[in-house]
Length: 93
Length: 78
Picture (cartoon, rainbow over the protein chains, first blue to last red):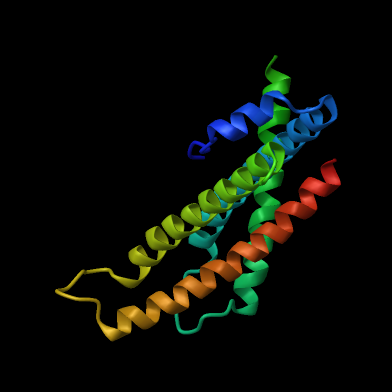
């Protein structure tokens, strides 16, 4: 994420926020950060699965039925696989 | 005048949207260029452009499928 452009006015205002507003703003940023992380995971996942599932000619703009089910399976198996990695690593401890 | 809290929230939202859009554009270009322009000529042919349009739409369709599927896992996990 690029830097925010916080004006002097806003900076001043931030210091004068009430405790309740501070807490709300903090919670908002935590939530947005989480959303951004999820979005970035979806980008990565989609990139991997697109490569595996969309292999035919680009003859139309919509997903074929088999491509759609491949995408879903790809996401599910990727999750299975990442769980497996964690489980196996735990066994090694 | 917008208060400080609202100002920061708007900016954070806007930056998040820009970052997301930028990632999507990058990925689409990466995949669709690979698929649609195997040997770059002196200009994009109409066939390549059609391929690019289809590829772009497919990529976004795939993104929505991925997003739905992934979010269902995330929600189950919580």
